[in-house]
Length: 260
Length: 260
Image (cartoon, rainbow over all chains, first blue to last red; front, side, top):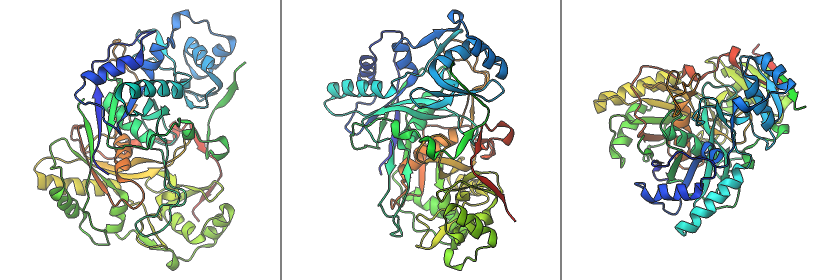
């Protein structure tokens, strides 16, 4: 493999409801120091997708349900934020110390159902994780592909905590145009030994390094062009990254609440 | 942030017991297409550390204990491999379908205690995860620093599965010379809102992208030079990446066996 590089796209203005995101990204690519080439991948943070789609809530306008109050009191959390999380989730696990782990309707299991207050656009504002990251990845990919004349796969990233390790890392919560898993089944290692089950979550590794470039503070870099991985173009989404329940080796501690 | 790039170091010969790894890596850097610069980080797969240190076992020479036979039968696994895993672990969780999750004496919790058969150097051979990845990272870093005249932080990587997501990703199992966590506490986002708890596991994100470049088949790229992240040089190790038990939100399914 050649050098793998991650190029920040700067100059993307603050995204607000109704922005045409594919056009904003194309404009940013056009003025960036790196011109797209065949094999490049674009990583976009979920946050600007949500903002463009109006998936933003002002907590001062939220009226918590009784269930939200009960769960919020259990873990010591803002009941209004808890209400927003419940609106995105089928099941919430109350894990103590202000932490809710939620299973969203689209199958992602993550802290606060992906609801996030940082860089939300205001002090009492939160941004939801889009419900259709794969579809939005597809729309951006198709738009950029039409402009470039060659396919540009797109990965949508968020930052998630992990079961056994400290800190968060960037992961893929949506993609289009590449297989999120690199499968070694049938391939041989250097000893000629067949690899049986090796599957590498390449979309997550790409999202993680793009997150390094984006930062999580005031950097203002919501998109990163990735060069050097050059995946085969496939009309796939990120669903294969969700581990089916029957294969889970870990269970979430804490009480499970189904949405009333 | 500028462009972040991952440069494969090729030309590293097969590593065998007694090899001087820092010298091999320095030689590879000297002939590579990229000359080290201040701010660069070197990522090295744990496997060549183990091979250099003779941390390799031939299963035909292993006599399983009664406990290894019992656990192996429970999950359908080779009793000899189970014995090797037990030799590296304090506690093993039997999780069904051939899967053991093990807590190693050094605190890492991972599948098979990090014992790995791929690219082990022979069909009946397995490679252990080194017990002292941080120390080895420090030794390599100090050696390269002495050669270069400026500090080169080192990250030791392995590939791990995740609790809720399919596939494996590269993670840091040792490091020296950089803080493995980027802490945003006290920093402000774009709205001027203080970030309270954001902590990014940057060493894991670096290890993940380096693993993309290394591959897991017959690629033969055990080291990757990372340019563009340029961390402050700190004499830290990877311990902060291990989530303390009292902060765990997930528990391992399956029966726990303590080593007899």
